[in-house]
Length: 434
Image (cartoon, rainbow, N blue to C red):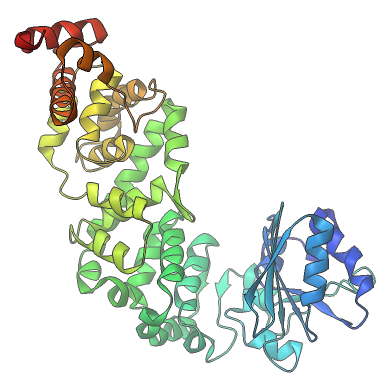
């Protein structure tokens, strides 16, 4: 851990730009970098989200910073004078103090590890870390501690943020904070769905996801958000997550496309890996739970369609997959019958198999390698163009669609494999139209 997180601040181009802007705003005698960026700097990480707090309205400074740095400025909360600058190397939030003094502002934050500050305007001469609650010591000791007695009640979403911090940073939750998490969990449904889902996604994406699931149960957030059945089935959920993790690692080791597919975004904050954890693991306790909660939490339409397609996966589908012709197009066409994204289906089917990860990997890896040969796996064009069908067979409209559907089934079944075979197949199947 670095002793002085301010040492590297001006190495960040945008912060150097901000420091250069401050001379034009002498009425802002103090502006402080606060919160998670300092925590990350102490951990030797490169922060991308920066929060600044000032006694005086910092909006004009934020606008000037955006103009100087080529960023985009917009309001977060005009009434409270909170605004954001989105720029190449991060997001920069500017706000008034939440209390009459900086110390009171820090005490109103969520956890001690996020309640530290650096005087950005004076740090070149005074690099002291402002840490009235002992956040640096807690971070060094790997302890999660509330900044004050009521901070979780003031914003219940902080319950999930605390669990996320604990699993992402490998922190132990001290007993009083765990009790505070339990007390505030009942208020979680009042939080904005968009904020709830992002925190749960990050918990699912964390390396220590099983510990995160345990903490969801321990602090009652799991029961409040997902129902008692999640708590009763937590061991099964964790088992599925671990099995998925082992399978995905084995597949990615032999196929770089798998690693890229797993990181592919579904919507902001949600990648394919986490979508599969959500759909498959939570579906263990109730097949409808992932989709019901996704609707309630306003997932994107794309995410909802993909989650819906992953319900009711069966052993029969796995058997069908293993018996398909070993060619890219039949595999993709077969998968597209069951949902909008073939990769989702193939990975989820593999994850639900009860064999060892290496055994499932040996079966699934060659199939994924074949699918990777396709330029676009979600849209596989027919072997025969519609204009040929109109010219040669004289069909159009609904009948044309039905013939193309029969051709897809023939390709999936291995009856045809290229355009020439497709033409011969159609001429023999519909001789009266030739």
